[in-house]
Structure formats: structure tokens, C-alpha cells
Image (cartoon, rainbow, N blue to C red; front, side, top):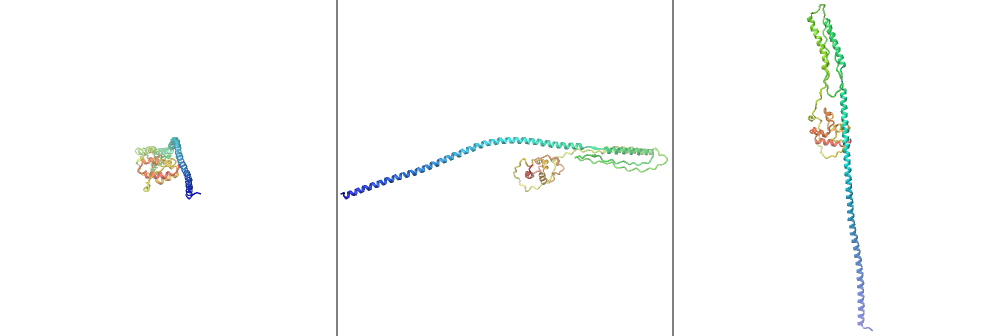
Length: 323
């Protein structure tokens, strides 16, 4: 039989072994768990780092691709823009040449019509003058024969002329002369000295009647040159006190101050705007001298009238009308 001391030692040894075994098992379990946790943390961090690197690389690659494509497209746009500008310049030159030829042809046709219409028909005047000469001659013959005679001349009509733009001078009509009073004759012939004044008067009247048509022919006065820089009443100035000048974007397909007055007047809407802002300009007596000028050119001719506010108001209203 074992003694109590031996039993105690044996029991104590078994407890120590159990405790050591438990500690060993617990240590093994804790170590395995920590390794698993650390492994999970390492994998997640690796994934985050990898995704971040890939994201940065993708963004950089996209930026480079966009920059490269932008440079290519900018080059193509510059080339296309240059081509379009050259084409537009060519079209503008052709349009300007065509408009110049059209305006010049219209002006030449107008001048030719005026020249063709500048004719004077003096056949009626010549017939009237010849009739007056015959009457005077017959009257002179009657007076030389000692007969009583009355001098009745025919009124010379005005010559028919074609309408001419320039103002023609007033024509003078030969007035009908007062009939001479009848002279009673007697059987006794009158002395020569009394007949001579009568014979002298007849040729004098004949000369006056014959010379009068020469003086009555219309003479076209030369056109008066007008200095458009000296004109001070082109139109009634509008009220521009409330006009605030701002920047305007004006394209070539609309009316503006770079359009000539003649082109503006061809469009009813633009014509109404012009007459509402510049009342009296179209009906001005010298408007024909500036009808082919642009509004901008007139601002240099008459800067007092075409002020900056007036030009802005015209540009603003006219740019709303398409050509």
C-alpha cells in the first residue's frame, strides 16, 4: 500500500501534467488563431494596394489617351478652320465683285436711260416761228401798200422735253403782241417820210420773232457739287439718353452698320428700323449721294449725327433681321 505522501506526490504529478498539457493546447490554439487573423489582414492590405496602383495607372493611361486624341483633333480642327476661312474669303471676294458689277451696271443703265430721254422736240416751235414770220411779212407788205393791217402773232408753244433729274430752267413763252390799231387811209398818198417808220418796225418785229426761239431753248444747268461733309441736317437725332452700350455679336447673315443704305432699303423690315431710328434720312434731298455707303462709313463723314449710341442702337435693331 502506498503511503499518503506517495499518493499526494502522485496526484500532484498528474495535476502538473494536466496543467502543462492544457497550457500547451491553449498555446497551440492561440498561435493558430493569430496566424489566421494576420493572414487575413495581409491579404486585404495587398488587395487595397494593388487596386490603388491599378486605379492610378488606369487614370494616367486615360489622361494620356485623352491628351493624345485632343492634340490630334485640335490639329484637324485648325486645318479645317484654315480651309473654311480661305473658302469664305474667296466667296466674299466673289460676292463683292458680283455686287460691284451689279451696282455699276444698274448705274450705267440708269445713266443711259437719262441720256436716251434727253431729247427736245422743237418742230412745233419752228412751225410757230415760221408762221409768225409769214404774218409779219404779210403785214409789212400790206403797210407798204398803204393798207390797214393788224399784226396777230401765234404763241410759240413750249418745247417738249423728256424728264431729266437736273432741274431745267423755266422756259419763256413769247407773249401775244397787242394788235396794232387800224389806220384810216385816204386817197391822197402819204409822204415817204411817214411810211419809213412803218417799214422799219416790220423788220424789227421780224428780227425779234426770229431770234426769240434761240433764247428760249432750255439749257440744262450743270449739276451742283454737294459736300456731304458739310451737311448738318441728315436726320432728326433720336433720343439715346437711355441707351447702354454693350458688346454685340454680329454675324454676316444679318443686317448691321456694315450694310449699305441701298441694301437696307431693299428689306422692308430693315427699312422700317432705319426710318424709325433715323427719321428723315431716306427723304433727304442729298440721300442719293450716300445711298451706296455703309452706316459705319457715314459715321466718319458725319460723326456728330452718327454717334456711338446711335450706331449701337442701329446695330442692335438691325442685327435681329436676317438678310
